[in-house]
Image (cartoon, rainbow, N blue to C red):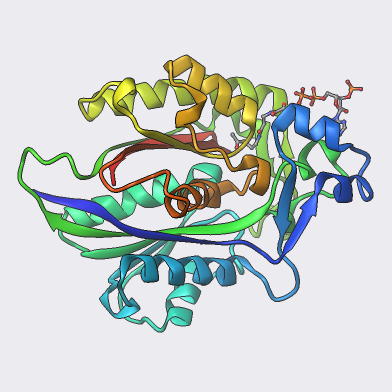
Length: 322
Ligand code: ACO
């Protein structure tokens, strides 16, 4: 049985770290308000010369190094982003060139904050079908470029960054529980007005700004995530108590808390980086995973649950034996 197995990961952040106090000098807000409502204390903001592609390339390089592989062995790049460098070509092709690769498929997927789950699901399907052997799966964003810095209800919540996985085909015995065990993805366009960007090449000809009705998003996030998490664990034939680590999309500490509680999982099994990175959209899951992988919390053999929910709405989860 061919399955996708995790080979390594990497991440990258912009050089400029902006604390809540620094932000409060530009925006009518306070460290106390942001910390209490979201758990965020700081975020990284891309500066001149830093783009989604540069961050993605750096994260991908680190993932290749961690996997002990070179770009010459990679035959697929799937990159999730809502903030591409340009409308086209896909940011994945820029990363491919920067890494020194050519010829093999490289494309972007757009599912906003759930993008990494969609990218992982796509790459995993291509590996299991025999189309690809070694894939770079990347989530990368420069959300700061689409924030309305006059809107304090949204601009304090987001940050920039990138994370990447290398996953590879491995022929495993039928009873093996290694690799990507189950993935579940969902979308529902009904609530698009709760979280969206008010511009784009085909509608306004502008880039637009992120708009969000935070309270409603919060309610939908907790309900959808709790459901997809139970579904994916059951689909893979496990129970929640067997999960070693949950690596959630880092939107808001209160969403992470409420979701963990619904599943009956203690918070000490949940990887939290929202305090340091804020919400980095498609980058947040691989970024958080990379932090916990490098500090030794996530180890080989661990059962890890990845999850995310974002604009669309889109949401999804994946269960992985590292
Ligand atoms: N600083 C100070 N005051 C603020 C700020 C700010 N940055 N932003 C809003 N306020 C004020 C509002 O003006 C309002 O004031 P009022 O009562 O005088 O009118 C008050 O704070 C409460 O505003 P709400 O929007 O109702 O605040 P709420 O308690 O809902 O918290 C928040 C807002 C943090 C956005 C919350 O709704 C939330 O966490 N939602 C989840 C959304 C999310 O995380 N989205 C991320 C993208 S989607 C995803 O990734 C899942």
